[in-house]
Image (cartoon, rainbow, N blue to C red; front, side):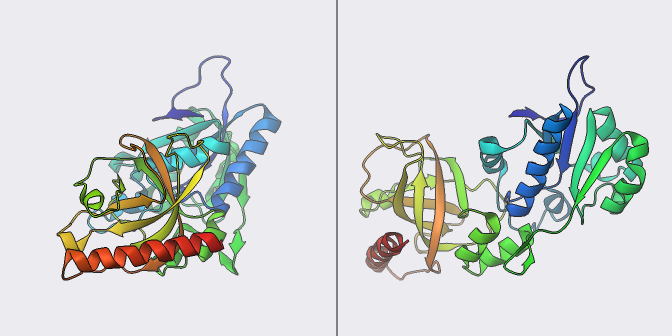
Length: 312
């Protein structure tokens, strides 16, 4: 999968694109349908498949002080897509210029950048005040050289699958419901950074990940599986553990952080990219009166996490 930061005119002999367009936060089952449809059409037409997305996400841009919780940061979207995604990921910078484009200008930008067909959801909107709707593309796209395929809603658990529904499920601790809509367990990914090493001193060394998003979709203590630990474990090996996602109020933390303790693991994880898969939510994040009281609860959390992981 290639990464483009802008749409550019095609070189002579270079294949054009079948592009699916959107935020793609979470890469859920609905997104997968769009991506798979674009890939199939691209193969049949001898073109390249493209996911065209935006950074920051438009909803983050319009609400910078209080953006919606983000399911996937850019690294996470890239990793999810490179497994079985498009030929090209194009991440356009969402700014005043892009938000002010009218529908016609937006569509012409696509065509000038080599896009020959678009695969979009029924509720798609882009351009100034959302002028470039699915209905607009169906009506105007062919005259601009754009074939248009509009995909109907994808349903799961009796509702339309969307990033907002998944955010709600995660915020309510319904990880199994979120997993059904995503098509996989929800996870976060990043490189392990050096922390304060308090967990090591307390007998629970943790791999610390910065969240790389303004707001996480959930917090609390979780039973998890961790991939990418290395140290003799294969790249797909999943190691059980317990994780805290929050600000660590007992020790005066302020910045949200993901801390994962891997069971029965001895090794150095600093600088390694790992994926933390959330299996079950155990409890809320709490503020304890003493560190000793927190350690007692950490023992309980580890026992609970082991029991949950053994049962699934």
